[in-house]
Amino acid sequence: MSDAKALATLSRATFSNAFAHLYAPADLKLFLKTSYSLAKTRRNLADPAIGIWLLEADGQAVGYVQVGRCALPHPDVTPACGEIKRIYLLPQWQSGGGGARLLETALAWLERDGPRPVWLGVYFENVKAQRFYGRYGFEKVGEYGFVVGATVDREFILRRG
Image 1 (cartoon, rainbow, N blue to C red):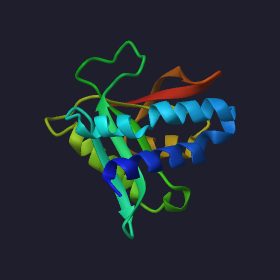
Image 2: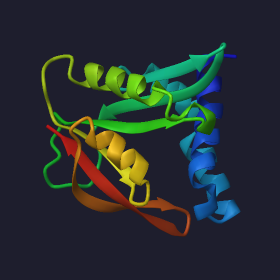
Image 3: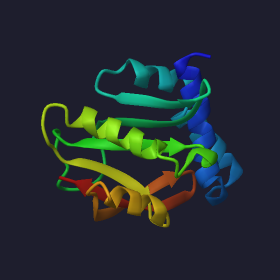
């Protein structure tokens, strides 16, 4: 399986595992189709301004992280800011150190030319993830609405640096 196909499949699976219960099935289906399509995944992989790493176990993709320029709606975001856009692992691979490896790889890439502000959005009820990011120096600096169909989720905006 190509990296693009593995990433698109993993992206849909991990987002669904984490959040499918929040959305109407039709809204989720459309969101997955547009946000995690094979074509969009290929474009992201080809874009030098986007960094993506897969975590594999026994030859299977079990997690990934995607980073790039920050696009979060916060007044302090500048073109120099980086963002952890997505970091997901399949449930059975969470809490085993894979998330830390992915995050550390992403931070090293984003800060390869020196320190800079790094941002991320996290679902407001995902306290486990918030604690994880806190261990890496991320602090809550705002909130925004993440739209999936008719649902607008409350997301916290976190920043490091």
